[in-house]
Amino acid sequence: MVGACAFQKEHVYNLHSGDIISLVFVPLKEQRKTRASPTRNDQTNNWLPPARFVRIMFTSQTSSFQDSIDVEEKDDFESEEIASYGQKTQLNCYYAIYLYEGTRSEAPEENVAWNQRRTDSTTSQEDFSLTLIDSSLPVEAEPELRTYIARRLNKGALLGGMGNIATVELSLPEQAVGCYCCLLEQERSPDQPDADGNGHVICFLGGSEKGLNLYRLELDKYVQGLRSSLQTPELQNLETELRPYLSRWYEESVMHIYRVVQLVQSNISFLLHAALSHNHVEVTNADDRTKTDVSRFIKAASLQGLSQQDTTAASLCKAMSEDAHSHLTLDCAVTPPTFTNTVNNRFCEDWSQAFLNAAERANPFLLRQILENFKLKAIQDMNSLKRFVRQAEMSHYALFRCCQFLQGCGNGDVLLQNARAEHSDLPEACRIITVLEEFIREQSLS
Image 1 (cartoon, rainbow, N blue to C red):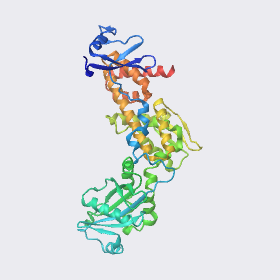
Image 2 (cartoon, rainbow, N blue to C red):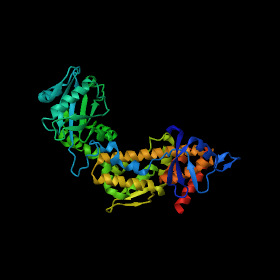
Image 3 (spheres, rainbow, N blue to C red):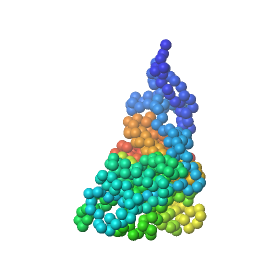
Image 4 (tube, helix red, strand yellow):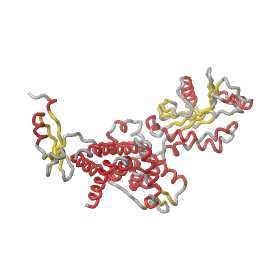
């Protein structure tokens, strides 16, 4: 009797379409016979595929596209933390800012008086005091948040300049919300040696912990923009500068991806392709906010900083930027805006529909998760191609698998562009990539 472990699962592919036409389980004994059946070239010692069908004895490295973008069937999106924010109304967002003072520091006389006027808004601990400066929270919820922050500070969980995200339960309609907290320490100055250890605690509340974690970098950068405003004595610019800045945190740090998708709609695929191929995007006839939104979207969708060889990606970026004719131009003079010098592929076109579906639900958290999945899939395909290229240097059969992979992924032009940049110092790999580029051109013309 043959055990279950004595069987090998195999896929049978159609060479003309690349589709799986059957799934079979072959006993190991017959498997050895099967491996001897294809035609063999004794001089190159490489296996050559049969004329019409080939039995591929390896696990597919690329999951189906539907598995990658059908986010509603994944646990990360089924959780209420992200998927439930499919609202058409504005999400309730709050902010709070506190003065953090170490008890060992001697506060100036005017600051002491300023704090005495806010005795009811101060939480004092053995090593520090926390005084409310401004908040958009309901009156009953703010002391609860202050108590929570004091506990975090006691545990040393808030480090200077680094945001901390958690779920807090406050007296709010939402009850449990995501809370971003960051301690901005006061910059040391020779004129104010006692200021060491003082600073401000900034809190942003809204959405969920998982949702805010998707925008952690944007929130960190937004908080750093407060440094210059916090240098004013007694925060005399609270009404004119500080409060408006704090109240816009959600619009500026979270909603920019949503605004870009709403702006360009189905043409989002052009921006996705430009981001993957390190192509410069020029925005004309638009306000500063739109230009900034598009620039941030391209940066968020780019793989720069994630690949193993950042130097080659940077050099490729520089080479692309020097070619003005390759710039993608977005003209916002008309509605909807128009694009020139567009380049696209099937991979980006397919993913664009997932972005449009999330935008219809007005869900910026889901949009960001889809963007991260988009980048993850591109990286996985890039790694698969590099592995196939290394194998193809020794096997014609592996070269055939490269062609099949590029034909199926729909992102062959971008993958080969990045592969050529990363293998520029490997002559044999460059020859393989040249053959693959010719194959892609032939496929696009046919």
